[in-house]
Length: 223
Image 1: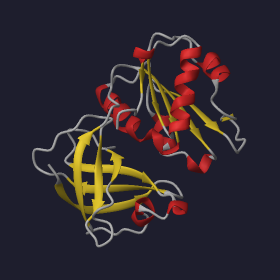
Image 2 (image 1 turned 30 degrees about the horizontal axis):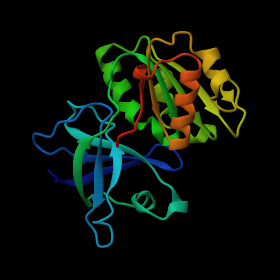
Image 3 (image 1 turned 90 degrees about the vertical axis):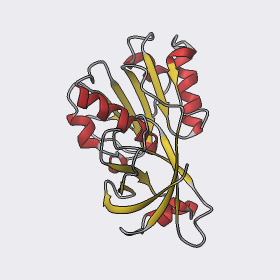
Image 4 (image 1 turned 180 degrees about the horizontal axis):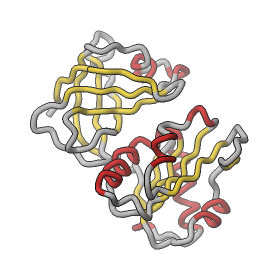
């Protein structure tokens, strides 16, 4: 059932990523990792809903989304970059294939980290982050979403990987089978993957190559 939301707040997180805060409809429930479709209630945009992941938690009194803009695509995310509080949206959901199935390794590329924001925040609130490992790929350090939060999350092991920049203390290059073999010691834990489809496919193949069974891999497939 669609819900009408009013945007309360927009705040930058990186040079191309913002945090969007909405009021929460009554009796609206979701699970960490799930998403919903958002459509701007404005001529030309009502029929252009796009899926975005909740980054707020199920017991919060507001809804939050972290959304990266892609100017080259000239679409909804670019329109959102200049949106103002007070704008009305329609939300339809929740849905999604990613859910918390236990501590494990979270493999994210760029904005693909968004389902893990709610999952790891929820675990942090419960004091259950121990055993969680975030391997987060980006182009440059300025692209890392919520870097301070990840680096300060008690119990979370973090590996930042940058493809186009060398920064002291961060990995340079790509996450491939060799990287996974070096940084994953337990292939029987849960593995979560989110990012562009080519990244998801490559990570799934790499995990299987190092001995991870299919039923231990959670991806966004099925959206």
